[in-house]
Length: 248
Ligand SMILES: Nc1ncnc2c1ncn2[C@@H]1O[C@H](COP(=O)(O)OP(=O)(O)OP(=O)(O)O)[C@@H](O)[C@H]1O
Ligand SMILES: [Mg+2]
View 1 (cartoon, helix red, strand yellow):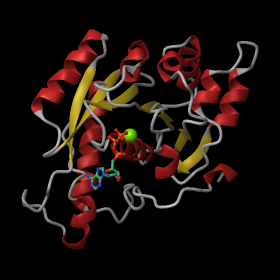
View 2 (cartoon, protein in one colour):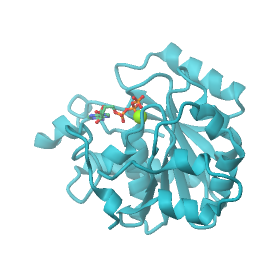
View 3 (tube, rainbow, N blue to C red):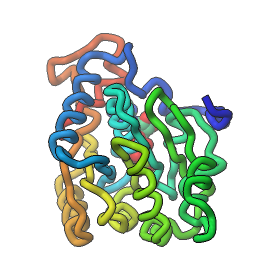
């Protein structure tokens, strides 16, 4: 385990929300369903790239992206997760690792630098077995320019030679364009919706925005579904997990 794994934040709202052997059945099943749907939607592709976004913030897309990535690593796939939300990065907090170097350093590297070397210095290996993370790194002033840069294409091309599947956590599309600017590199986007909070018009606006950017949407995840009212109440875990219901 790399020395970058040390977590320096104070309170971590993501603690205990990564799927593991103790995760309630309904929750792990929801992520298995999401995984199966993503596999189906990318059948035949060597290394699909999935982006996650939402209409507005706080829908759970970062934790959903993290768990989707973990669920693929459980299939013994080599998985890369990129924190593409360079405005509000949290993947380093979710996995409790250092954020001193990451995507922003990779995307602002000079042409003369060897991508393999910069990559090796920016990636955190095995945040869980089989899953590598590129955290955000230093917050840059120009995230959309960086995400649409040639360096981003080089990064994805390079990573496709190493991994079986890549996930990118993006910011909300109705707030900033970042999620759509790399649409040509993304196989498909997952739109996160928070039950009881995201309204229909917001989802429509997000879909419209993505369409205008030629971004392919592969599905929607409905997060924060109350399993108690849906007949799947799981005792003491319900409070933490009632919500990770997903439908892709
Ligand atoms: N299903 C859930 N059950 C309990 N807590 C949840 C659930 N989904 C998300 N959360 C919590 O809600 C907060 C927001 O989640 P997250 O950061 O994943 O959302 P986001 O859509 O990525 O937000 P942002 O738009 O700010 O990037 C976090 O504290 C997370 O732990
Ligand atoms: Mg987020």
